[in-house]
Structures are given as structure tokens and as C-alpha cells.
Length: 317
Length: 295
Image (cartoon, rainbow over all chains, first blue to last red):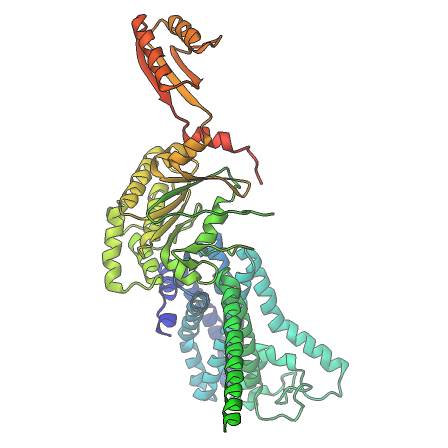
């Protein structure tokens, strides 16, 4: 486990990433964009209070705007960081040298993903002061903010896993990046379109189709305090309809989203790990199956032997 | 398309095995299979008793692989680059510092320790990659065209480095297009063509195997016509074409015959500069055993 976390790949990725001028530039651009939105919104509100004063909804409105915009930024930035992690190594002709070492495919894939996610986390954490503005106006709890950041983390992990998966599948980084963005677009807009279509086709179905919960915007929306949701178009009854039944009320939509994302992450990373190492991949699985079969055969023979012995013993009695 | 077909060979510990063949012969595929980077569709390969397909992690610990085309992490410094790979092989931090120092000295890059890999010349990068393949002190080195694309000086430096590794007792499998250098360095040679191993053995065995007869090499200061006349009489040949007073002819006689010819030439006052028996070099053998088939 220690080898998996304190890994040279992670160390190298951090070193390489933070050494160039691109990193501070990207952080500056990211924070600059968030600053523009916050200050722009604050400025328009200031113009308004000249006549009527700050409304009670100013804080929540900034909060909603900021959180949605930040989710969009995370969705936009994550593929750029992850969709070339393996194909880039392949293009640079360094992948074979990496596979030649004692690092396992699991270790390479997980640490590549962790390095990218760590950088995205840095972007998210560095944006925290902007959320301080929301506190200035009030109306948001710290626990709600924590939920929002969990949604960001899960979204980054999901889109990161998609990026790493595409990067392993496709030889060219360009193809990998394009496919990753298409998949991310599907998560954000495609799931919404399919949901709208299903809701219109089957208006009496009740509840929301399961696919809606894959949308990170749904997860984000469900973490907003109740008053924020007023006037928004979809009323997300908790619990996906169809599969489990519309009356399942134990989990919130963001929790369903996390479960869905978790499954997607595990499946995609598992396939990526299998595909990365051309020699180690299936042979390891095959060996495992062989061992299991051998153990079964051995235990079968032993039980047969025991049966025979016990029969003999019984007869001997 | 089959890259490598029906290949069977054994390399002894401490041997330097040169794999020769035209482009597309299957040399790189063979090397990648041995380095546990490719799985053969059928057949097995073992390194020091370890099966490459079933125990790749153990094999990778035994093998240092240098591909024909390789990239480097340009944004790392030379020592960071080696440290990364040493860490990837699980070498503890304290040992790493010492190993990196020794390796940089071996490949003559100590003065570039703090330089970015990006700033190194092609030859230096090749040497750095060779150092990288040695970080875990492998028993076997698989070097795919280690001197390709190098200028003459860098090529000589690389050759000297390989001789040093040979002296250190490493087993090396090396491919190259520069056949005279390979012949000088290797103890064993294998020639591949169209995915098949055409010939394989020690240098002497290969020369012996491909020998079609003896070759007589004569060089005279002048009087080439007189020398030709003697050879015509002694060997019964009708034509004896000396070129720039030199002659290479196939010879099927005995050592006594050679002695008689030389004695007669000296007795007749032919100014002989050299009189020797020529051997097929690796280039000749390569041309002889390959047919120029490309997959």
C-alpha cells in the first residue's frame, strides 16, 4: 500500500507539472475567471442596492452561480489533464520503459490519475476564498459547502477515470482527448436530454429516470439548500424510478450519483489496468483462475481421499 | 502477419549475442518478447529460468532493456531521471544516490548531473538511456540498436562503453546494423530474416559454417603479371586478375601448396608485400545467408 501511494510516478508527475510556467498560468486563469464572475455579480448587485438594498437571496445566488460555474470548469479541465497520461507516454516512447520497471499497471494507472486529480484539487482549494464571499452574505452552512466539494471531487475522479481509460485505449492523445470530451459532454448534456425525452414520452411513469443521476449537475443541484431549488425546472424526487421502484427514499440524488460514479470509476480503471500491461494483464488473471481450479481439484481429491479413508475406517469398525 | 516464426536460440551467461538482420526481420519483436513487453502467440521464452509470459515482473527485474527508439522526460534533470527509474525498480533512497553517481561516471555524464535531459545531445541521451537500463544491476542487457543515429565519435564512445560492460561480465543481447562493430564485440551471432533465425552460433562457428573454401589474398609491390603467371601454372587457372597489385582468389589447395607458391614467388624475385589467407567477414556472411526478403 505504501508503495502504491508514495510512488515515483506521482512524485515525477508533481515535479514535472509544477516546474513549468503552465501551472501557475492555469491557476491564475482559473481563479481569474472565478474572480470575474464573483466580482461581476457583486457589481450588478451593488448597482441594484442603490435603489432597493441587498436582497436576502444575493448570497445564495452567488453561491449557485459559483458552484455551477466551478463544476463546469472542473468538467472542462479534468479531460485536459487525464486524457493524455498514458497515450502521451506512448507517443513520447517512454511507456515501454515504464512498464519494464517493477511498477505494476495498477500503480501506474492509479498514480497517473491521482497526480491529475491532485492538481484539480489544488484548483478547487485555491478557489475557496471566493466562497468566502458567500459567507459574507450568509445563508450557507459549512456542511453544505463540504457536500459541494465532495461532488467536485467525485466528478473529477469520474471524468479523470474516463480520461485515463480513453488514454489507455487510444494510441493518439488527440483522439483520446476528443473522445473524453464527448463522453463528458454526454454526462452533462446527454443525460439531461435523455431524461427530458423519457419524462416527455412517459409522463405518468413517476420519478426520474436512473440515467439522470449520472449527471453531476443533478448531484450538485441536490446538495443545494431547499430554498435554492425554487423555480428550477426539474423536481428531483429522491430515488431513481424504474429499477428499484419510485418509492425508495433512503438516499439523496447526489448519493445515487456517487454510487453510479463509483461503479464507472472502478470498471473503467479495471479495464485500463488490464489493457496497460500487454504481458502481465491476462496472464495474471489466467494464473489466478488456474490456481483456483487447481485448489478446487486438490480439495476435491482430498475430500475424495478423506471420504475413502472414512469409509475404510467405518468398514474397519 | 507473423513477425517472428519458429525461432529457437539459447544465449549462455556472460555471452554477447549479436542479433543481425535487415529492417523488419523480427529483431525488435524478439527483443520485446524477451523484455516481457510482448506476449508470443505461441512458444515460450525463459530468462535465467524464469518464464517471460508467466512471470514478467521477475523477468523485468533481471533484464535491462534499451529500445531502438526511446523518449526521455525532457523536464527532468539527469540525476532526477535516473532517480525516477531507480525508485521505479524499488531501490532505496540511500542506495540510489550511490548508484546514480556510479552510473553517471560509467557513461561519462557526471558533469551533466544537474543538466536537464532536454539539453543533452543525441549521443548523451543514448548513454543516459543505457545508464537507465543498468540502474537495477540487471543480469541481462537487451540493447536494440544502441548506436543508431549516432555520429562517429558517439558511436566509438558507445562501443567502448559496451566493451566495459562486457568486461563487467554482463550478458548482452544486442542488435545493430553496423556489422564490423558487432563482429568485434560479440561472442555469438544470430542472423534473422523474415522472422526466422537463419544462422546462429559463435563467430568461429558461423565463419566455419559459411565457408565455401579458402581465400588467398596476395599483394605485390610490382610485377603483378609475373605473380599471375606463377599462380596460373601452380593452380591451373586461366585468368588471374590483379587489381592495384592485389588479388583475392578462392583456393582449394593445402598448406603445402600455399608454401610452394610463396617460395616460388620469392625465388623468382616477385616483391611480395603480403601473402595471407582471407576470412569471410560478418558482412560477407550476412550477404551470403540472407536473400533480401522483407516482410
